[in-house]
Length: 492
Image 1 (tube, rainbow, N blue to C red):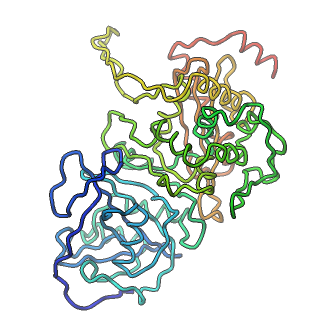
Image 2 (cartoon, helix red, strand yellow; image 1 turned 90 degrees about the vertical axis):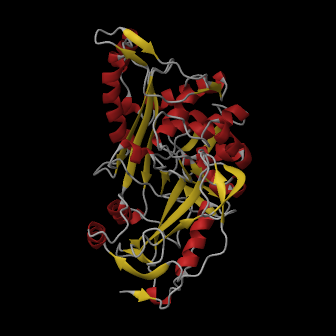
C-alpha cells in the first residue's frame, strides 16, 4: 500500500543550527549552522526512527528527487539532524512529527544502538506500532510516499540499488522479530541488541549496547564511597520493591526474605540494588557515573568507539534511578564495562585499554615496550578491596559458583535478562569474571544471546568463563594455590 502527497516543493528551508559536541558526546555550548563545513573535532547528533508493525514490516519512505543526498531513494521510516536544544529522544519525536505527522512519546526511551560517523553520532530508535498510512501528513520537502515492507522485499530493494545501503538493514528485522519497543508500554525498558555478527570489529564497537543487567559494581561502588551502606546492613526482599507508582520485581518472584548486603549481592537481588541506589540519590549517582569515567569514551586504540548513552542528569527521577541501580536505563559498550570494572577492582585506578604491550622478536627478546599515560584514582583502595571481596563471594558461594576453579581465587557476577516482548521468552545471559582476586590480572566477559533451553547466566555463561580461565591462568604463569585446592576438594 502506498500513500502519496502531490505537488512539488523546492523552496528553501529556514536557517538551521545544531549543537556542537565533543568526541565524548558532551555539548560544547557552541552552535553549528547547517550547510557549513564542520570543524575538525566538532561533532553533531543525528537520529533515525524505525517503525515496525505487528507483522514485522518496516515503514519506509521515498525521498524527494530534489534532495541533495540519496535523491529518490527509499529510506528508513524517519531520519534527520537534531537541532540546537534537542535531546536525542526529543529530536526523534520531532522528526517523526515533521516528516510523518505522527505523534510519539519517546521521552523515557533510549536508542537501541548508535552508529558513529565522521561528523558525529547517529542514534537509532525502534518503535513497534501499527500505523494507518492514510492519516499520515507527509512533509513535502522530504517525503514522496511511504509504505510497509517485509525483510525479503527490503533486502531485494537494496540489492536493486533503490534503497539506501544500510549494511545492518536485515539485522533490524531480526531485532524486532524477538524484541521490540511498544509505544504504549513501559518506555523505561531498554532493548538489547546482538551485533556480534557485524561485518568487523570496528562496526561492532560503534554500537552502544546494553550488555548485561544487574552488575552491582556501579551503585555498590558509589554507595561504599558515600558510606551509605555496610556489608552487615540488613534488607528484606518480598520479591519486589515499589518505587513511586512502579512495582519492580526481583528475579526471584517469591523473594529472598531477610538478607544482609553481602548476600543481596550474591543473590543478585534487585530490591537490594534499588534500595542502595536510592540511598545514594539521583544527583550523586550521576556524579559517580562521571567520576568512574562512564560519561567519556575509554580511549581504546581502535577507531569508531561509541560513547555512553544515558539520561540527562535533570531527567533522572526515582524510577530511572531504581532501574539504573541494577544495570538498566543506560547503554555502554562491552569494552566500557570491562574497562570500568577493571578500574574499580584494580585498586581504584581508571585505566585506558590498549592492544599493544610490547614488540618482541621470535626468540622472545623485547625490542620495544609500550608505555601509556598515568592512571587516575577514581575510588578509594578500601572500596576497591570491598567490591573485590563481594564479587569473590558471588563465585565462591553465590550465583557464579559454576565459574569456580579449585586453587584459584575468582570474582565475578552473573546476569540473566529477559528481552521484550516478554511473551517471546527470549533471554540474554552473561557472566563477568576476573582473577586472581587479590591481584587481578585478567578479566573476562561472556555474553550469550537468546540461549536455547536453560538460560540462566550462572548456569550457561559462568562455565564458559571457567573454561577460559582454565586456559588463561596457567598460560600467564599464575600458580595454583595447592592448599586452597586441597581444601576445596575436601569440602566438596
